[in-house]
Length: 362
Image 1: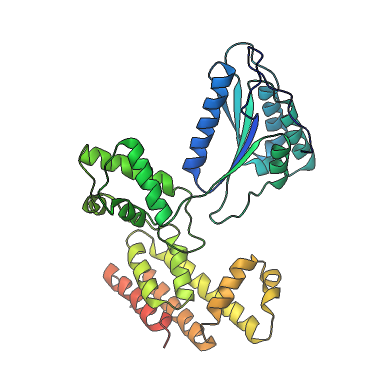
Image 2 (image 1 turned 90 degrees about the horizontal axis):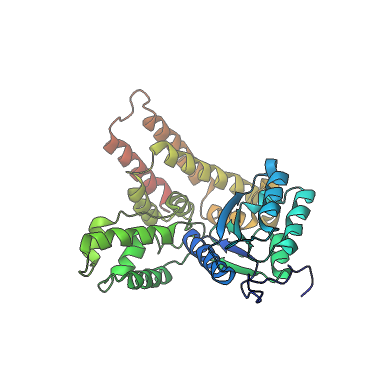
């Protein structure tokens, strides 16, 4: 493999080490990535003959040179006694903005001393196909390091993950319980932009709670329904997508979930923004603008433009204008304009009627 490699690693007894000196972990499953870092540290400690000292370095573009210098200082010198140092580097993109900082960072990798190691941890958005720091990834591979993705499981995969996690804890789950827990924490939401970064962590915490409640007895579906609050990831954005798709039934269901936990001004803001986006894209398409030119015109990601264009075609211009006007009236109601309904139940009814009359396709 081309590129520089770190010097041959060895233990205090002179034997070669099989654990790589550098790794790059990325994805939207923060819990899995954290566990992988812990396993990496344990493996280094076992081969180095003593526990490693973990040092956290978070990238900051305004302090990049100093942070890279700190990294070099911690990992380029071999420890004389016991284990070495594991540097856990997050937000690495901030250390690669300037060319000289990126060059200095990558130059550290061949200098990692025996017993020391570096692991880069990059949290990516759900659905990311690859990590954002390609040059760092390539350098890690060239140095013989490990690059691994940790993607948050969803739907049946999350239910299976919950079953395995419960088994490791000695927790007995009755039939259907894992699926119900996955459902309650949003594992079955199919929206592409639903955020799942903390989903497995949330599931693990809920298992802890259920274990305390049931002890050695089996945990049932009813236990989950009684103790686990429903939390749908990215459900505000799922609501706007349902509105854009004119799926009134789904929009109503999502609104009911959100109504008690999300401030009304927040809901109005995202709904207003979506309707305005659909009006803008609808106007451009109706005047002959080609869809493939919209990302540059609007400054939006092509995938997002594709979604919005598909939604805009489900609406007519007059329907969007009517939806916007009624949203403005609903906004005045929420803000307590004179003569507007003031009770929470009346305001909720206003949202429900807006979905029924303006979102539903007629």
